[in-house]
Length: 249
Image: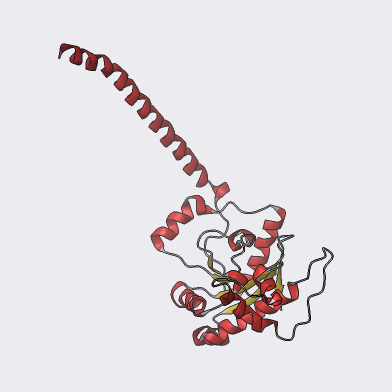
């Protein structure tokens, strides 16, 4: 019994040293975190735009953001600290809804140099629309203040290529292919590009226009809003080789 008590007594300084080291580590970590958050809140890291994108200026604003993306002059957005807290506490009010492809090369927030709370995004293979997409944008318009919808396709789209090829696909993949096929009616056979591959860009552009048309046809709310001048609609193509966005007429 005496040996056990003596052993415990010998271990106490060691245990105290361990806890002392742990407390020191906590202090260092918290101090570092405080410095990081303070740096995120300095004027040099705060995004210039804080009041959303005004109606009628969406195309201009998106084009400017894409230019910043192309030249590497992207803004330091407040998503690191302030904007996350702001949107978490007061809610979201995105100005622009974006329907684009699920392709990992087409992240709209990066492509358009936007921050947290700016875009209301739906991503589907082939940027196809369906009832859930229409309902999502109706909610964005009616409840969140969204005033612009952009449908954006991209070059070298695998979903469009699959629809053009017309080969059977496994699982649930025919669902998106079937929604793209009607957009291709009347299109000429793809030409062969300089890289020796079929040029699918005309088909992708036709699909963008078709999906926007179907979206408006499906939603009486969005169509009415567009006719009343409360909702703007845009189409665009993203080039996965250059990073450039080209707006369609």
